[in-house]
Length: 318
Image (cartoon, rainbow, N blue to C red; front, side, top):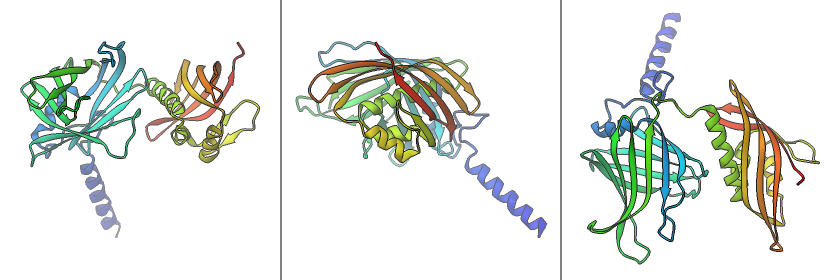
């Protein structure tokens, strides 16, 4: 019986190992391509890892907006059968994609999602690698109703980085209007986002959720056993109570909010963070007020995600 149990245990371990052999791991933090995947799985190989990027978008008046710093991370997922990427942007408008090559149609299919415009139906892009470029299309009409596509170009791809261009083109591509440019430099040490970068990104996401008055997202930014310490109130604990506290504010609409960490110290799977925050509210009577405050947060890392465990804040009189 003992020999049988050991044999079964060994078989289970081998099976589980095979199922995750090409997943991200300590040895391969961004995963590996599965040999059973279509050979095109390596089209994105030079992009695998983390790049530091500069992003520029076109304003409505056709001028270019100020550059926005961001990181862009690519990794293999689904045991090396697909590619996932995510961007963490300085302005808090983060995004990501799931990329799969379908051999039957000989195309890449890319499903895009964004923190600034969540949707139950993800937009889909399709295309291929052509010579030294990866080109993807999404059918999209111009503002004047003309048929065309939004075209994405990955080009100048190398182990040192790549460039990215988003442009609207008409159906025969005789006309092009660039709307988005990104230039990326590969991190030489190829490290994942640091814990501090993840916490800063989580703080920006909190501000973004607060401005959208997305109280469910706010509550989910805390651990399930979190406690918050608002001024002049008892300690508030747990998801539902925290969600109720944030959603109970009335008489105004938040129009600006920014969290400014002054120090973040990582201690294993916990961290402490203190700093200031600023904001502006529009009252129901049309008046506006600006404010500033200070905070201390204790973070916990669970399932590779940093969430707030203890959160205390109060206003600064000016």
